[in-house]
Image (cartoon, rainbow, N blue to C red; front, side, top):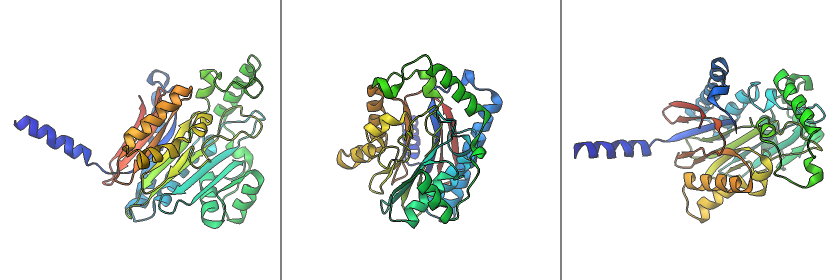
Length: 333
């Protein structure tokens, strides 16, 4: 009997853990056997720093939006992730960045797409939300707006990294041997090796002391993308969504599928109308994406501090921090 009581107490204690933040750094074929010790340590260090910076904001009583910006900025400044400094290249050899943020209390949101000179796109997204009457700005217009808001502007060369450039060259070589997606009408014939090269989108969901949720997502998009392609990350309801009534959600994966399923909003809708919990709702959406042929993952945090991080790939860079400051970082399945 004592053992049973102990088990129940432990289960109850585990159930009552309150999370205040979760982050992701992308999902894909991430296998332990392909990871060097030094690279693994680098990812763990970067994810840990992001959680520490975000948690510091929450601990100091600042808003969930501030926490999201702080965490994502760390990952945007790291070449390890497909966002900011580590963004992948387009077919034309450029870096085009997308980002979005949403406030769960007011449902205000901001997003930028296709920017090439803004050092931290997540800050530009917040400026759109806070300093304009709009939700999304793109390309040159978004860059002009960012300049007027005093955000840090960099030469496009800042985003160049050898690893991402090499990834583009491999994709271009393979491109010669396959039909182009935009001509054949098939949206599910991308070889797996190409999909892996675009996974690295970063995101954060946070719950502050006032009980308000926020979600943010930032990405460099898809390696070898053409014709101004934009994925789910800057699209509210697809790659990013927050609502105090339900949850904050940030997605990573094959963007076209997240757009087609309104993935982030879908989680919220399942919770609001279907009365599902955050774990059930988020898993159902990832399962739906998988059935359509898409892959990736998401992080979701509800207003009670319950977190879910489902994914249907071999791994997802991810981490959490509790209200007591306990940090946990994971990479593999």
